[in-house]
Image 1 (cartoon, rainbow, N blue to C red):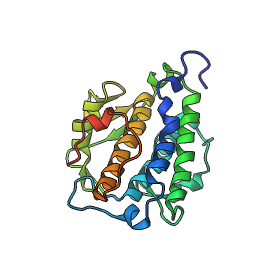
Image 2: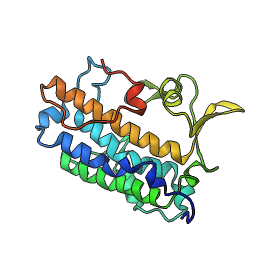
Image 3: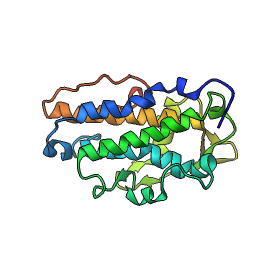
Length: 223
């Protein structure tokens, strides 16, 4: 735990509010609406339920799996059995059959993010600790057909001014620090919440929450 410096929570107070936004935006939606996809839309391949499932898993996957050894060593703050509940970048439906179950998981997942932020400072999340991802040209993300390299170049690097960089000696390696990680989780949550709102508009249902127009929302397009 970092004992000196400015609290990192001051940079990302919205992390503690993400689940409330999702709970309000999905409350009362019938099952057929929650599960409907729109293959004709670039944003419609994942249903409302899929969007929520992905975001519910987000802090778990980044902080426990990607950052786990660096942040916690062998003393993870959540049981490793949790890893068996992931289905790629979502939660397995068997463990979260209802949207309320997903919201409950999301609440704990983002509580974990808030816990980690509480042990960091604005200085420590920008220090030399970082994680690395190899992203060769042509790498495709299973399930979505998304070109990972194109995403990193056209979205990640454009949206983030700091916290992510390409290795000067190996152009396939991307490095991420903790500041990027928390910013990414927050911006991902906003982008998927906007996608939920787009689904609702197609159903003739008005969105309920205001989403900050920042980060990925300023780079991505919803046709």
